[in-house]
Length: 223
Image (cartoon, rainbow, N blue to C red; front, side):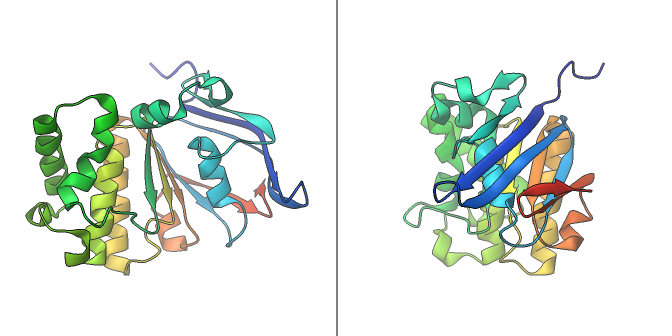
Protein backbone atom coordinates (compact mmCIF):
# COMPACT_ATOMS: atom_id res chain seq x y z
CA UNK A 1 0.00 0.00 0.00
CA UNK A 2 1.39 3.41 -0.95
CA UNK A 3 1.82 6.24 1.55
CA UNK A 4 -1.34 8.36 2.06
CA UNK A 5 0.83 11.49 1.95
CA UNK A 6 4.32 12.03 0.49
CA UNK A 7 7.18 11.75 2.94
CA UNK A 8 8.28 15.25 1.90
CA UNK A 9 6.05 18.01 0.58
CA UNK A 10 7.53 21.38 -0.42
CA UNK A 11 5.01 24.04 -1.48
CA UNK A 12 5.76 27.57 -2.71
CA UNK A 13 9.07 27.77 -0.86
CA UNK A 14 10.62 31.23 -1.08
CA UNK A 15 13.73 32.62 0.62
CA UNK A 16 15.33 36.00 0.03
CA UNK A 17 18.38 37.52 1.70
CA UNK A 18 19.78 41.02 2.14
CA UNK A 19 16.35 42.47 2.97
CA UNK A 20 14.77 40.88 -0.03
CA UNK A 21 17.31 42.01 -2.61
CA UNK A 22 18.94 38.58 -3.12
CA UNK A 23 16.67 35.81 -4.33
CA UNK A 24 17.82 32.38 -3.12
CA UNK A 25 14.57 30.47 -3.78
CA UNK A 26 11.33 31.53 -5.44
CA UNK A 27 8.13 29.49 -5.30
CA UNK A 28 9.74 26.03 -5.25
CA UNK A 29 7.26 23.14 -5.04
CA UNK A 30 7.74 19.38 -5.26
CA UNK A 31 7.07 16.19 -3.37
CA UNK A 32 9.11 13.05 -2.75
CA UNK A 33 8.40 9.65 -1.28
CA UNK A 34 10.09 7.09 0.90
CA UNK A 35 12.73 4.98 -0.80
CA UNK A 36 13.61 7.62 -3.40
CA UNK A 37 17.01 9.10 -4.18
CA UNK A 38 16.47 12.57 -5.65
CA UNK A 39 19.27 14.69 -7.08
CA UNK A 40 18.96 18.46 -6.88
CA UNK A 41 21.08 19.90 -9.63
CA UNK A 42 22.09 23.27 -10.95
CA UNK A 43 25.07 25.65 -11.02
CA UNK A 44 26.68 27.14 -7.93
CA UNK A 45 24.48 29.78 -6.33
CA UNK A 46 21.22 28.43 -7.77
CA UNK A 47 19.67 27.69 -4.35
CA UNK A 48 20.53 24.02 -3.75
CA UNK A 49 22.07 24.55 -0.31
CA UNK A 50 19.33 26.98 0.72
CA UNK A 51 16.69 24.40 -0.17
CA UNK A 52 18.36 21.72 1.94
CA UNK A 53 18.79 24.15 4.84
CA UNK A 54 15.08 24.95 4.83
CA UNK A 55 14.08 21.29 4.69
CA UNK A 56 16.59 20.57 7.46
CA UNK A 57 15.28 23.28 9.82
CA UNK A 58 18.59 25.12 9.65
CA UNK A 59 16.84 28.18 8.20
CA UNK A 60 13.30 29.49 7.85
CA UNK A 61 11.49 30.43 4.62
CA UNK A 62 10.00 33.83 3.89
CA UNK A 63 7.00 32.08 2.33
CA UNK A 64 5.87 28.55 1.65
CA UNK A 65 5.55 25.29 3.50
CA UNK A 66 7.66 22.21 4.17
CA UNK A 67 5.91 19.12 5.51
CA UNK A 68 7.60 15.90 6.59
CA UNK A 69 5.20 12.99 7.07
CA UNK A 70 2.43 15.56 7.02
CA UNK A 71 3.92 17.66 9.81
CA UNK A 72 4.37 21.35 9.03
CA UNK A 73 7.95 22.29 9.98
CA UNK A 74 6.78 25.78 10.95
CA UNK A 75 4.96 24.16 13.88
CA UNK A 76 7.95 22.19 15.18
CA UNK A 77 8.70 23.52 18.66
CA UNK A 78 12.03 21.77 19.24
CA UNK A 79 13.97 21.74 15.94
CA UNK A 80 17.05 20.04 17.43
CA UNK A 81 15.00 17.10 18.67
CA UNK A 82 13.14 16.84 15.38
CA UNK A 83 16.41 16.84 13.43
CA UNK A 84 17.84 14.11 15.67
CA UNK A 85 14.81 11.87 15.10
CA UNK A 86 13.95 12.52 11.48
CA UNK A 87 16.92 13.98 9.59
CA UNK A 88 20.50 13.11 8.70
CA UNK A 89 23.01 15.53 7.19
CA UNK A 90 26.06 14.98 4.97
CA UNK A 91 28.07 18.00 3.84
CA UNK A 92 30.86 18.56 1.32
CA UNK A 93 33.21 19.18 4.25
CA UNK A 94 32.82 16.32 6.69
CA UNK A 95 32.68 18.47 9.87
CA UNK A 96 34.21 15.73 12.00
CA UNK A 97 35.11 16.82 15.56
CA UNK A 98 38.93 16.63 15.34
CA UNK A 99 39.48 15.53 18.95
CA UNK A 100 37.02 12.61 18.70
CA UNK A 101 37.66 9.26 17.02
CA UNK A 102 35.64 8.23 14.00
CA UNK A 103 33.53 5.97 16.21
CA UNK A 104 32.86 8.80 18.67
CA UNK A 105 31.89 11.13 15.82
CA UNK A 106 29.50 8.58 14.36
CA UNK A 107 27.96 7.90 17.78
CA UNK A 108 27.39 11.58 18.61
CA UNK A 109 23.84 11.95 17.15
CA UNK A 110 22.57 9.11 19.35
CA UNK A 111 23.17 11.15 22.51
CA UNK A 112 20.06 13.23 21.76
CA UNK A 113 17.97 10.04 21.69
CA UNK A 114 19.11 8.96 25.15
CA UNK A 115 20.87 5.79 23.96
CA UNK A 116 23.33 4.34 26.45
CA UNK A 117 27.05 4.85 25.93
CA UNK A 118 27.73 1.15 25.44
CA UNK A 119 24.98 0.80 22.85
CA UNK A 120 26.16 3.94 21.06
CA UNK A 121 29.65 2.53 20.79
CA UNK A 122 28.39 -0.81 19.52
CA UNK A 123 26.15 0.71 16.87
CA UNK A 124 28.86 3.15 15.75
CA UNK A 125 31.32 0.30 15.20
CA UNK A 126 28.69 -1.64 13.22
CA UNK A 127 27.95 1.42 11.11
CA UNK A 128 31.64 2.02 10.36
CA UNK A 129 31.92 -1.59 9.23
CA UNK A 130 29.06 -0.92 6.80
CA UNK A 131 30.85 2.23 5.63
CA UNK A 132 33.94 0.14 4.78
CA UNK A 133 36.16 1.84 7.36
CA UNK A 134 35.64 -0.22 10.51
CA UNK A 135 39.40 -0.71 10.86
CA UNK A 136 39.73 3.05 11.39
CA UNK A 137 37.10 3.30 14.15
CA UNK A 138 39.57 4.42 16.84
CA UNK A 139 41.52 6.78 14.59
CA UNK A 140 41.23 10.55 14.78
CA UNK A 141 39.90 12.21 11.61
CA UNK A 142 43.30 13.75 10.81
CA UNK A 143 44.82 10.27 10.63
CA UNK A 144 42.55 8.79 7.96
CA UNK A 145 42.01 9.55 4.28
CA UNK A 146 39.49 12.04 2.92
CA UNK A 147 37.36 9.22 1.57
CA UNK A 148 37.30 7.50 4.96
CA UNK A 149 36.35 10.74 6.71
CA UNK A 150 33.47 11.28 4.32
CA UNK A 151 32.25 7.69 4.65
CA UNK A 152 32.31 8.15 8.42
CA UNK A 153 30.29 11.34 7.93
CA UNK A 154 27.73 9.31 5.99
CA UNK A 155 27.64 6.80 8.85
CA UNK A 156 27.02 9.62 11.31
CA UNK A 157 24.12 10.87 9.17
CA UNK A 158 22.53 7.42 9.02
CA UNK A 159 23.13 6.24 12.59
CA UNK A 160 19.67 7.26 13.87
CA UNK A 161 17.94 5.75 10.81
CA UNK A 162 16.48 9.09 9.68
CA UNK A 163 13.48 9.34 7.42
CA UNK A 164 15.27 11.92 5.25
CA UNK A 165 18.96 12.33 4.49
CA UNK A 166 20.11 15.71 3.18
CA UNK A 167 23.43 15.49 1.35
CA UNK A 168 24.92 18.80 0.21
CA UNK A 169 27.64 18.20 -2.39
CA UNK A 170 28.77 15.10 -0.45
CA UNK A 171 31.28 14.07 -3.13
CA UNK A 172 32.69 17.52 -3.88
CA UNK A 173 36.07 16.84 -2.28
CA UNK A 174 36.41 13.21 -3.33
CA UNK A 175 37.86 11.44 -6.34
CA UNK A 176 35.42 9.64 -8.63
CA UNK A 177 35.88 6.24 -6.98
CA UNK A 178 35.25 7.45 -3.43
CA UNK A 179 32.45 9.70 -4.66
CA UNK A 180 30.64 6.75 -6.19
CA UNK A 181 31.10 4.73 -2.98
CA UNK A 182 29.50 7.52 -0.94
CA UNK A 183 26.51 7.80 -3.27
CA UNK A 184 26.03 4.04 -3.38
CA UNK A 185 26.03 3.94 0.43
CA UNK A 186 23.34 6.61 0.51
CA UNK A 187 21.29 4.78 -2.11
CA UNK A 188 21.54 1.52 -0.18
CA UNK A 189 20.20 3.31 2.89
CA UNK A 190 17.24 4.66 0.94
CA UNK A 191 16.37 1.22 -0.39
CA UNK A 192 16.90 -0.76 2.82
CA UNK A 193 15.34 1.70 5.28
CA UNK A 194 12.59 3.19 3.11
CA UNK A 195 14.17 6.60 3.53
CA UNK A 196 14.32 9.60 1.23
CA UNK A 197 17.77 10.83 0.18
CA UNK A 198 18.15 14.31 -1.34
CA UNK A 199 21.56 14.92 -2.93
CA UNK A 200 22.50 18.45 -4.00
CA UNK A 201 25.17 18.17 -6.68
CA UNK A 202 26.52 19.86 -9.78
CA UNK A 203 28.14 16.60 -10.88
CA UNK A 204 26.13 15.03 -13.74
CA UNK A 205 27.60 11.57 -13.08
CA UNK A 206 26.38 11.64 -9.48
CA UNK A 207 23.00 13.00 -10.55
CA UNK A 208 22.73 10.19 -13.08
CA UNK A 209 22.76 7.63 -10.26
CA UNK A 210 19.60 9.09 -8.68
CA UNK A 211 16.05 7.98 -9.34
CA UNK A 212 15.15 11.44 -10.64
CA UNK A 213 16.51 14.97 -10.80
CA UNK A 214 15.18 18.37 -9.87
CA UNK A 215 16.98 21.22 -11.59
CA UNK A 216 17.29 24.64 -10.00
CA UNK A 217 18.21 27.79 -11.85
CA UNK A 218 18.23 31.23 -10.21
CA UNK A 219 16.26 29.85 -7.30
CA UNK A 220 13.46 28.31 -9.37
CA UNK A 221 12.72 24.77 -10.47
CA UNK A 222 12.95 24.26 -14.23
CA UNK A 223 11.91 21.42 -16.49
